[in-house]
Length: 167
Image: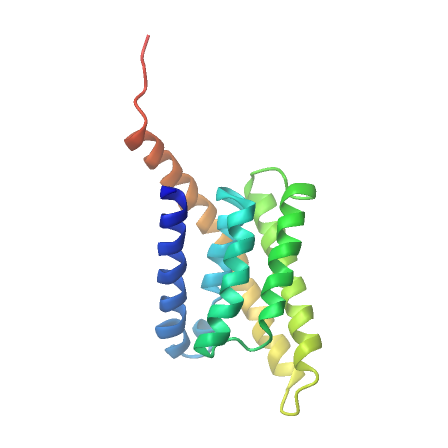
């Protein structure tokens, strides 16, 4: 229960931070996929079901706010594929599995967005792919440091909330 409340708080915090602050920055910084990055970390480190729900709600929330460049079905599909990949391919809880999961999910996310947005009249494929490539760099960089921060938070929470019995 406490884990779900904390995850909902992080969801709202990262969504608002990305929508209100990151999208106002200049070019290389406004495409940092912070919400996607935290969703991958939640899926990998906390609970795959919670991560899949994170992506499903992200699609609807970002569409509602107006910052979703494609359909919310893309986020639902990426969450479902990430759930499958977490159990079948990237079952190890290492940094390499986290980066592989994030890279795979973002690659699928880019392909699905490219397919959906190709039907739009004012779609520029080269700008889109350039932005997605830069965002992928930020995603891998953020996943590496996010893994370190998540491990630190897990150890800190374990030390604070569990009493160790010494012999």
